[in-house]
Length: 510
Image (tube, rainbow, N blue to C red; front, side, top):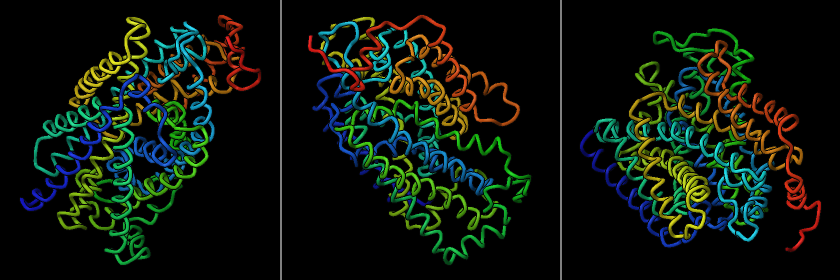
């Protein structure tokens, strides 16, 4: 890029970064309790929650990994878009309303006079099943998989800064990590959610605008898809396997059943991702679930579909000349727009990175504070102390995530690994917590351990290309049944409490 391009882009970036930091400062004064920091005091409406949830979900992989996947192998990646859209919709319809209601009603199970609500996923599990063992196991798996997820986000910041400003990837990684850490530690969930609203709209606008601009450049939809099929007609066939080999797109085989199942299985990740579930807990009302589902589907189809179009546009405009397929978005921005507009759209990439990283930092730090410090070290800690401990937790998690980022790796690969871990570890457990009276604390704990470890182990031994979320989720379901059926029996008052939650028995005042 020229100096002029760098200067105009720099101006846009500075304005953007100042804006998100300002949101962090604004939210700083509104964090008085742990509930404020972790889930924003349950004050956010349907639109903000839906856009924030989608922005948090649609991280750097939508700008780097997904266009790169379409560039390499074409329409076979449509199955992943279908799975993700279905999963996002079902999570709103099946989980959102109940989780919002139950998490508010469940107080600390060890003290009936404690009015603190369940504001983290480990706390929700502990209070639902009356087990601090369950709290600890949940917290450990959250931290482990979030460190991996954060690593992918910080890698993306390094790529962005290096390509725009000519800095080293190391420098860009460190600068991006610092910015996200600062406003996340200041403002907590509120800062994360409102910056996600801004970032989500910026992501939405930039992806759509680049898709439309690319189609216009190539002469309309017919010419656009014609330029793609000129390389290989099977690039537009979701049932055909295509690979880029030595500068040519070659049809390799039909897309195997295992690959389709693996792509659709991305849907299951939504059932256990704490940064998405925190949005459900933080809704102003459980009634937001229905409207959020509709908004979410529109956003999902538009965002992910635009990412696919961008991958095809890179094929049509650059041919096989891209050295790194994950650069498709960045290269098209420079090709299609003047420098000042390019700066806005490149800020959209940074938005994607930050919208996920900030949410992950808030959830991870809240877990450290609420489910380790408050639960086991200082139960009587004042609200202000807990908020400051959470801010320190943000710094700690960001530091470890930065270390992971410095090890390198594929962005989409790291995201897929963490996504599988969350879905397999917490998906079956959360469904049981919301819908099953027979599930026990031991069965849920066994499910979390078995599902999470299966993802880790299966990834190392897989020989058929099956996404590790599939066996992880199935093993988690099996472990849930076995542990609940044959493990230690549940206390009677846990079942009675669940009846109260679901409205099957009247609430008895004490």
